[in-house]
Length: 208
Image 1 (spheres, helix red, strand yellow):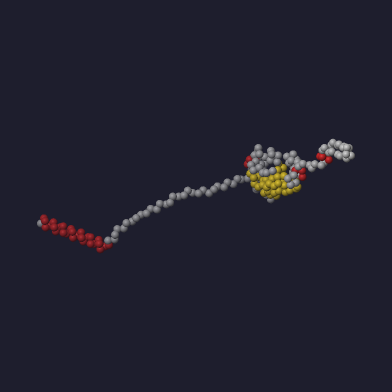
Image 2 (cartoon, one colour):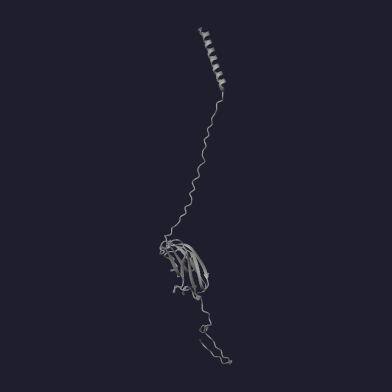
């Protein structure tokens, strides 16, 4: 701090070169990247599992200001969560919260699972190169035991190909006209008369 005394006007003036030396400047908000805003170093943030519900309780420090925080549960391929790229998101919630103490809750599956409390948004596809630790966003986590998670594959119903229309065969039966018994008798009589005439004619010609 530099002090100057002005005597020409008989007025004593103090020129303060650095106001921060007297605490006149408000402290700046500290970046969450340089300060553990959720008490990570003391383990004050924790996750409790009860009846397939994971509840995370944590406190955001006043110096950190508003923070985006996520709680996410994953179906896990093993009790330890490995391999990471086979974990799939089961349920998540993301909120932006002011400094204070909060609780967030998500459901967990009935099989191996992992629950992560993190700063920022959810990583939907974890991998060895894409983790909350690697992005400096991890707060705390919890793994759960159970049977191995199964993947349910829904097979769409198979629609059989359309069958061609059935060919209907039509049989046409032609009926002969009903001549009746009388007509048959007439035909027989006529044939006999003709035969008789031919025989008589032949006798006349040949004399026998």
